[in-house]
Length: 382
Image (cartoon, rainbow, N blue to C red; front, side, top):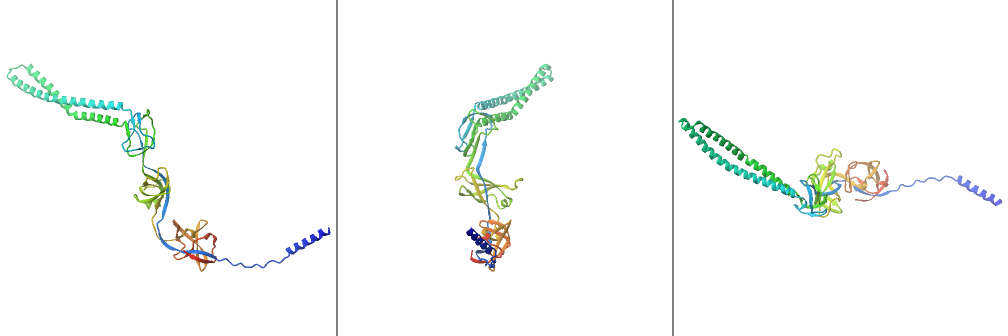
């Protein structure tokens, strides 16, 4: 019991000593001097670029259809097959169209024969008319001398009128001959074209991308049956801002990156009036298709207007804080945080529109760790 009392008294004494000890005298700590790497703010001539992504598509793509209706009789191609220009892809049953051509040719030949006959008859009718006209004149002269009867003269005049009517009819028939032949020739030519249209041919060399019909299907002129694409060159479709479109011209050479390949492309189309919804301009860049394929994603590097004599500093020198941009200048071995107005970023440089002057020494790295008014020691200059 006595031991417990002694231990309690000792503990109480220690506690009183701790509570009643005097406070330490505070000592002032020296502010650490930071070593910094700086660069001089200077002017640059920069060529800014902007990278835009899009998807590659065939240079030419067309959905082919027959110009006539009919039943598919032959399918000569399959998807993925390459064809030359003019190659037959599909055919229709041609018997009806072949008969239509034969009928049109027969009608043309028959009409040509009729026209030849009418022309011969017109020549004969004109000679008969001339003879009959002379006969009437002779009878009229004899009639004045009362050598013939009036009835005979009337009969001659009636026959003359009949011959005149026959000549007029034949003249009208032969006069319209060229028009009738023209109509029948047009029918014959149309029938011949329809017969040719029973074969669907490739309008250009390319690859068959899809075939939508089988042998035996009935097709109409409005039904797409084959999709043909040309992949010798590919087009990259992208949308660009107005500022970027103003710096581009049709035919301009640009760099396209696809599947780790860097290709040279050229601008083949640039929309002048922007889309009314997105206010962007459609841009089409054409590249060789021998190393890439349709459907791939690609990026195109588009140059903007050059920037001349602008102040720029490394990106690492800029500190962003609550939406504002700052840099640290070194003035008399002290860091001074300066707010700046930034412009375009060009590769690893940041354009500064205001806040710096040429020759200012600017900290280029670790800016997030520094504070305004902090002593600094320059370790080196870039």
